[in-house]
Image 1 (tube, rainbow, N blue to C red):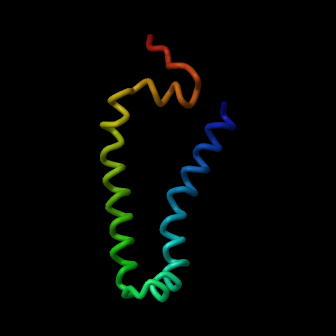
Image 2 (image 1 turned 180 degrees about the vertical axis):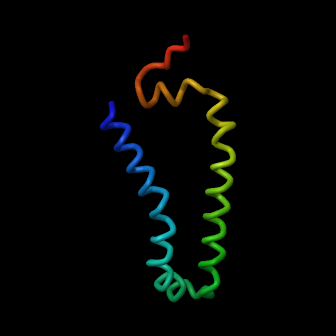
Length: 82
């Protein structure tokens, strides 16, 4: 189980970091082929940042809707409350 948890943590870490770095690497090709201004990268970056903040703020409410489901997904059983 520990290996699975570590794998999920690493995938989450890379999944959160890739969109920003990929935008920077791909933007020179995007703006030349689609004929959009260079400032469009800033708008896209701001949308990504806003979405990240919004999902962080909403995560507590989403987790509290079904508090046991996250534990069941990761460990295969609900934690015992004593």
